[in-house]
Length: 288
Image (cartoon, rainbow, N blue to C red; front, side, top):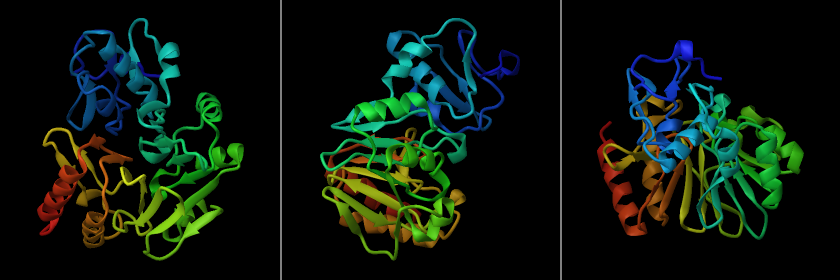
C-alpha cells in the first residue's frame, strides 16, 4: 500500500499520488497516460483525473502497480474497478493487469480460443484472476516469452492443469515446464498460434503470433508513446543485441496489426503500416 509520507514531491496536489517505492516499470503510464508521467526515473501524478474515465484508468493503474506505489489520500473505487480485469483489448484478447514485481511489472495477457485458452506471461497470482479465468473457460496453455516474466506461472499451471511453454534456453526459470521449445524454427502448437523464436533479449526469447493479427512481444519490442514509433532497447538486452536485431528483421516475414509487449506501450496499426514501422525500426537500429 502506498505511503502518503513517502509521496514524491513532484506529484501534483490531489487525491492520487505515487510514492518513493516506484520502480518506474511504466505500467501506470500505459494505463492512464493523462494522469501519470515520468521524471527523474520515476512515475508521478502529472495531472489529477478530470473525469470519470480518467479516474477509472488511474484506479486501474493503482491496482496493476506491481509495487503498490500508487495511492489515494481519500476515497477511491478500487473494489469496483477490480471487476474490470482482465480488461478486453479486442476480440477475445485481454490485458490481465495486476502486474507482478517478480517480472519488474511486466504485462500479461489472456486469449480465449475454441481449442483452449492461453495465458501469455504471468500476472500476480490472485483469487480474482483465478475466478475470472475460470468464468472465461480456464487456461490450457501458459506461454512464457522468456525467463524474466514467468512470475507466478507455476501457481496458475497448478490450479488449471495448464501446460507451460518456454524455450529450453530459458527453461531454468521454469525447469519443470511441460513444453520446452528447441531450436529456432517457427512452430504451430495449435491452430491460429505461431511461436517465433526471437533470441536477443535473452537466449530463449520467443514471441507469439495469434490469428496473424496479435503479436505478443515480451521484451523484444514495444511502441514509443512519445515518438510514435516501434522501439527496442539495447541497454536491457541481456544476451546478444546483434541477434535481437536479426530477430526483429525476421518478423518482416509475418503479418500482424497489434504489438502487445511485456514492457512498454501496446499499439494497433493497419498491417501494412505495421510492416513499414517494423522496417523503420530495423533501419534505425542497424548500426547500433
